[in-house]
Length: 269
Image 1 (cartoon, rainbow, N blue to C red):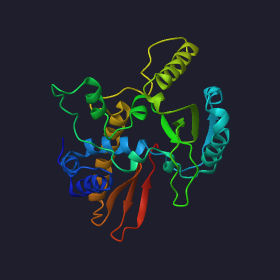
Image 2: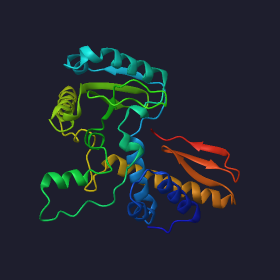
Image 3: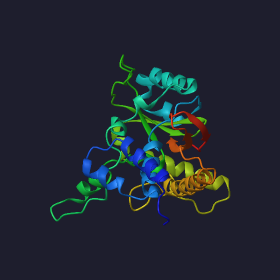
């Protein structure tokens, strides 16, 4: 790997500094990693969030078929209207996305640790459903005066695309592990494969690395790292000494010494 320039190091440090990480040791470890490794964790973090923009909403039949639907129909309609209006939906996500999104390496399995306990520790700092199936879960509670959303038992499982939100199912916290989401996503994938004439398919969500991150996030981090190196080199060739590089989700943003944005390279989120 080529050595990181000062501009790229500053970007790495900024990303690590701004990520919500509970343990100082975990933050210190990530701060010592190469830019691509940091980008993988940063993209995993940002992909857990929902970038505010108006989206068309598609509601799957499983939502209305849920036993929770009769009680929460108005909440589903409210969330639909908020997505269509481009309202920031991140308050409805798990509060963990604002508290801890990186927990270091996979834990060592000790003799007195059950497999279930090890799996729970391994997923610490990650959104299991988002990583495995590319699905977000939103709480249905009403918005509070401080902008937060009241926690509720039932959850709305949503697939997020740049211009669309897919309301997939109305479930609860048991849906994470009882097969509800995995079966629904596999059935959709098999239907898509059958419509296309069969053939091999990636798992729902696109596959997972041994580190518990999405394979697609890894590939995207590599792509962005190459683009950052290219932009950094161009800035040096232009003698743009005071220009710094930043990320807004996956947009690459250039700023002058006063912190004013002077150029933006849009990403895919």
